[in-house]
Length: 203
Image: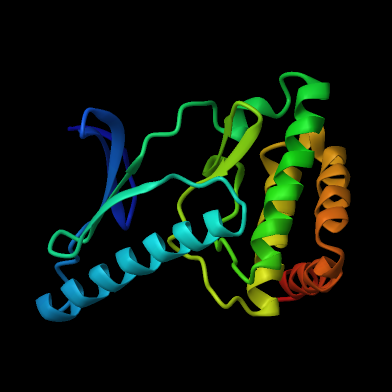
């Protein structure tokens, strides 16, 4: 296996599964925690993420297929998605960026309509795979998601456009229009995102 990424919570490595390209996401032990509690938390979080990936796919959102969940190692083996991260697509070509934003809005609308929040919705956790936007890393997601959870998704995405993608910040409106077109009830999440943003200004 070859390490692709290492975060505070998990190690992501490339591997093969039944001759298919795959990745393994392994939640790392925390030495400051009681070993039994640590094992229980890592296993529970791996199971939860695998369930959210499956439920999101049932909602019509492109997510990696789960090949295996190893409770002993707190790891998930899943499909390797080929394509650029959305963060790499935005800003390169305005028509392509606009189309990508509309696809993000549609994917997020399906996710929220199904009662699922992503929890860490940044353009680093989206991959453009052909005509699809694939969402990855549901570590912080929830189902059933509260209105606050859904608002956080919108807020994080808006913040990403304002900072990391300021050159195409105006395309966030296209994303939101697509989101509302595919999820007319999504205005409540947008309103909640506005509330969250106002809270941040005065805290």
